[in-house]
Amino acid sequence: MASIAVEMYRDMADMNGINVDMDHLKSGEVNLGTSIMAIKIKDGVILGADSRTTTGAFIANRVTDKLTHLHDQIWCLRSGSAADTQAVCDAAHQNLQLYAQQTGSPGVRVAAGLLQEICYANKEQLSAGLIVAGVSAKGGAKVYSIPLGGSIHEAEYAIGGSGSTYIYGYCDSYFRSGFTEEEGIEFVTGALKQATKWDGSSGGVIRMVILTPRGTERKLVLPPYAEQPASM
Image (tube, rainbow, N blue to C red; front, side, top):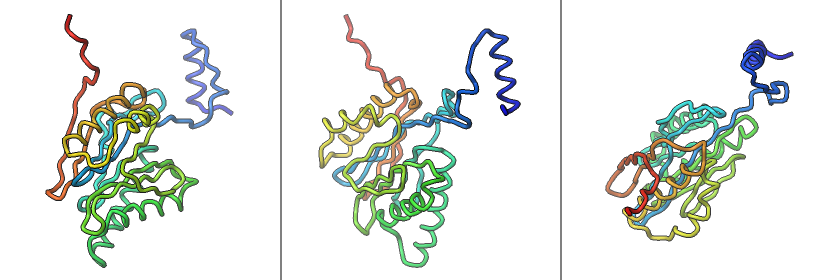
């Protein structure tokens, strides 16, 4: 039996001459998209993300902050269900606070491992793809990817979200070890510009966090991103 909302929409569609087979649509189906990435640089890590949150074909929020602070200089990038990833990061943040009180400041590996355990234990209920990156006294600069399903992978750079599909080639071609901070910012900005250009679920502004031994710096890149045509 169709819900009242579906019946109302069907009647409105018929009145406006729009034919939509509502019975053929999957109940509760929502498409979620984003573009997130993190890279290691010479003296730290850089995290970046677009700011668009989508609900199907609708843009629910144009200026979402997908970079979540976990502890000290450890941050997480969120993709998937916004509600799921917010809940997972909140739980991890609280547990890392307890860990710090009992055993001292955690390393990036500990934070990533905690998130991985939460995601794996609840993999049937969660839609969460995460990237954890940071700088700590225990292990230095690290980047970890935790894709859907709850596995964990350490790498020099990680990309995620629907926009990542369009920039694998870009990243393979232009990433190299030992980027300076300026080169890293340019690389992350260029990759996310391409992701927001080609992926309809990505857009808005580009938010970045730069983590180095000297501290934490946040950076905002505003549109327009399109290259300007050469003057005639």
